[in-house]
Every structure is written in structure tokens, then in C-alpha cells.
Amino acid sequence: MNHLTATQLKEYLEHTTPAPLLLDVREPWEFQTCHIEGSRNIPMSQVPAVCRDLDAQQETIVICHHGMRSQRVAVYLEQAGFTKIVNLTGGVAAWAREVDPSMPTY
Image 1 (cartoon, rainbow, N blue to C red):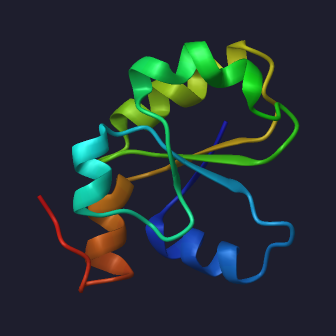
Image 2: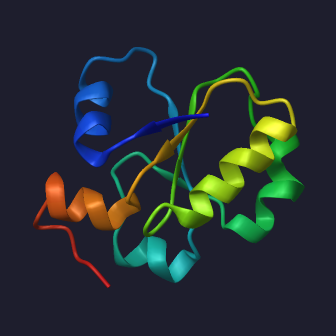
């Protein structure tokens, strides 16, 4: 598993084609409060049930509030055979702090 900071992810997204899946594993209320544009919300508890519907070969960047849940999901996905997994270190809290200060926080 690789790790990117919020600043590194912003730069990476600007120069990467095709775009990776931005997998936000927070709860729906958290996602509604704030999220990185283009993210797909699948709460952590639902990942095991839907991971077979995801492309295990697509680069997937896993996101949560501070980076802890996303790291656990990233490990799970790797064990399930996903080969291109990246954890967003610091989560959306770091994104709001370092990349988009206008983003609501909680």
C-alpha cells in the first residue's frame, strides 16, 4: 500500500489519467458534510459486501476523516486482491487544512 498526503494527492490528481477511484469510507452524514470532489462514498462497514463489484486492478485511493479507517480498508482491499491501493494520510481533515480551506470540517 502506498500513502499520499493531501498536497501530494491534489498534485497527483491534476496529472493522472485515467483518474483513480476516490473511495471515501466514512459514514453518509460525514460525506454529506464534506468530501473531495469526485469521491464515491461506500461506508467502511459496507466495503466487504461491495468490494467484488469494484475493479481490483483500478487504482483506488481510500479516504476517511483522519486516515485511520481508510488504512484499515486499504489493508482489507489488498488482502482481497486489489493491487493499486493508496491511503490518504490525514484524510479529509488534512485536505481541508492543506488544499481546500473553504471545505467544511467537523
